[in-house]
Image (tube, rainbow, N blue to C red; front, top):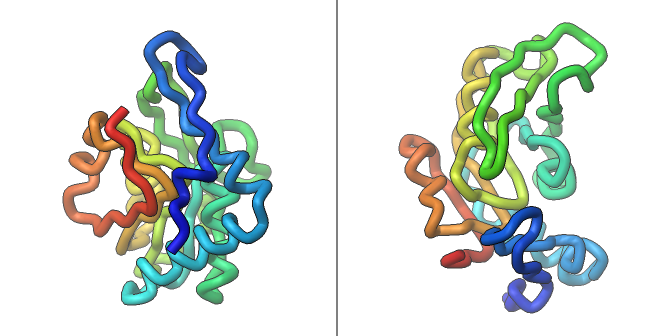
Length: 173
């Protein structure tokens, strides 16, 4: 297994003072490392029964879509408010440094579908808890959540108590 931390650029004080931003673009631009990361996530969730993967905008798309492809399941985007063309449901939430609203098409998830949520980063858990809320409102069952990175000091995992969480990397800050 690769040491994926070698492919993550850490930028201090971005987007504001005190934040240590984990930049995945350095992983994404390295084809072998990107493929290995997706393959490793695939291995970590292979035991789950997954019908579809949902990923929040925007970095959840670059993790969730290739993971869905690798698993042979569909991908459903979770977008910011006003970005989807059909009927939507929306939920507001607090970000690590602000507020936002996420939306899904009302027909994105069929009742009873087993859903894996995939994103680049688990921090405070607000985005993912909101994603879970959206999926459950549509009748889906969230069977797990997969991340490239987890910031353990922010305890986002605590908001996902009934969901299996897998991550490739952890950082204390």
